[in-house]
Image 1 (cartoon, rainbow, N blue to C red):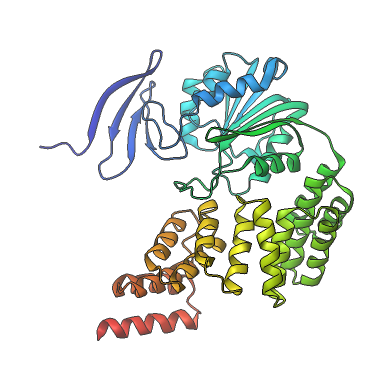
Image 2: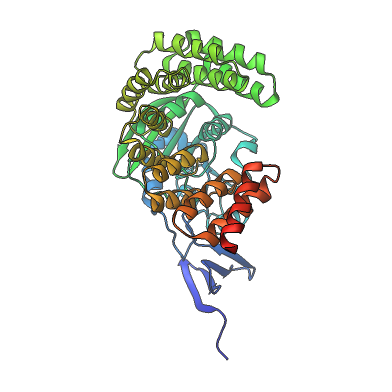
Length: 448
């Protein structure tokens, strides 16, 4: 009788550690036998490298060596936190040179591997945002982590809370470029400007931040800054629903804080005001921060969208083009340019939408207009590829996504696929008359 699984002999993965693998047919999953005899199921994907299996992403071994050089002797003498430690191969390197190592990893199976491969490290299985250390860390490394989290700023703020004043962090992330094709669950790559701004907003002073090969490397020191504190308090007030307090804190930073923090505070205030339907007040905040810093791309891009809403497409286009020249790798900036091109009927709109989507393929607010623009410009296959790729990310299989994909597949003449997507959209939003009518129309056409 033929075996239902591919079995490989035990492999020596590192020193005397052996792991046995059984491939689960029809999937990218493996059953792995740990040295204790425990069996666990792992998936070979982009997010983590499983010892002995490798991964779909770049090896991080050399990046940890670089991080050790960047940390320096003072940071290494104390406690170093490996933030997003994965299966622990980086923590294994760190434990050879650091006084203490704490490996933080949210995935339970990966944390098991980390405990095996970095036995001298303390392994904490938890989301970074929930961890509180008994003693402040003197150093931290974060390698290929921000690519996968939903809110990078919140993750870096969590890292800052673990670190004492003057502690050093090294962050290494994939470098963004316009035509990148990210493999889910990777959500983003970053430019040096983007990563540097995130670190400053989280409470770090940059030592250096630069592109090196296909990655961006940032070294920064934890600082105590009253403007950072107010910005963080504003975010916390927002999460508690104390919106007036949050707005007051954001305004205080936006009016007198340093450049990066003022811009972040102004944008946070704008998001809050827009959510409350206070568009005029939001526009006032943008104009105020741009008077202080007229070359800031994100406020320029946001103001461009207000000009679209005000029926000023020419002005919107000028603002968005200026923002894109200043920050060509920021997905929000490029999306603003695509919106301005759409309303001014510029021929390159579909191309710019595709560029914005490449920079942020997990964002439905970018993917849906990008796919819509491709469909309207008679590129239905591109439109379908955009929606399929975006819907691979957790949480994106929503009614509006199924609705658009149904329209795309109808344009491709695939009636049954279109009908299925329309039914899924209606199941998610059963009160929608538009979806009900679409399903009825597709049922009638297939019956005919």
